[in-house]
Length: 430
Image 1 (cartoon, rainbow, N blue to C red):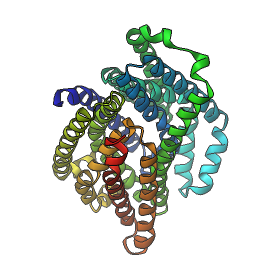
Image 2 (cartoon, rainbow, N blue to C red):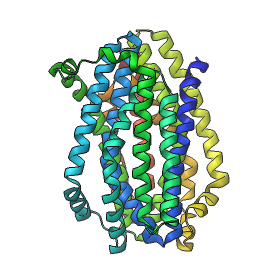
Image 3 (cartoon, rainbow, N blue to C red):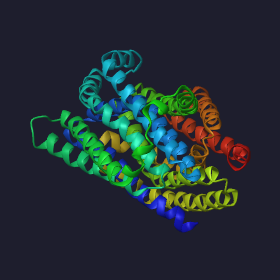
């Protein structure tokens, strides 16, 4: 079972390592072409895209869980039907985002409080990168399909390609052309379409033999569409709830000034660095729980869950020591503004406790997705949102911006407890 888990987890971890490096590269580029307002512009623009794209995370999660169960049943016709439904949904939402982009930004800045300089830079970034929407959303479906088919190498190849192209293109366009700050956005756009091109190529190479199962009329039959969207509606609410927390943390931070916003933006990127290691095993949990539930193999399911949790707990401990040894250096690498670096010292302790607090929640997420136990995932996140904002409301007057991190840790504890308590019913007896 260790070999099976690692075969799925290691490629995902390798791919995931490159994801935060891109965010850090964007932050480092912005930090070296201007002051805190440039970092703030990247933070606000990234938040706007997260509100769009992370809400679309159900395209990957729902596709992965349903395809994994179809794989366990050896029902490749159903797997291809899920893929077609996912792609139709991705392209439909992409068109909607492109049509409503200006209304979306105007509505967002009606609620976001930030300096005029930060707002102008965020708008510039957003209106370039939004044209990558078709590629970005389609890649979610491709990756979900690959993972569901127990193939972790293809999504790794796609992610690595996207992220390498992103870093190289952003650096080149920002520092070696006249684009300047906007080169960061153009680099991201180019990278997304490079990744989509590779994903289509891999689909043709590895799964062409299943194309004869594709039935467009059958895939879009009401019963199948209803099943797909009912399950994914729960995942949409889950993603929206998480982004409500993230957006709240970012927008409330902006009210404390550009320096606080820049510090919290870097904090989120450093925290995500650890989570991408855990996500590799969460993806393995997603693929294997779906596979074994589809095959009705409860013994293998229990073994897989135990092995995955042992690996995730070990990563949590190692990550805490990593943040303790290198937290200050990481901050200084990502920002050159003395005010930002000085302010960061009071936030580093949160990096030390986050891995141990969060590893249970992150691991259960993947297992529940494979089990398609989406209602429980949704409910855990709704409770977590309440915990985050209650903590900030109760402690904000006493702790200031630090209360946001108390709330963030509370939301992780709520998720961990809820999913642990309901696991027997939702996963093992599914």
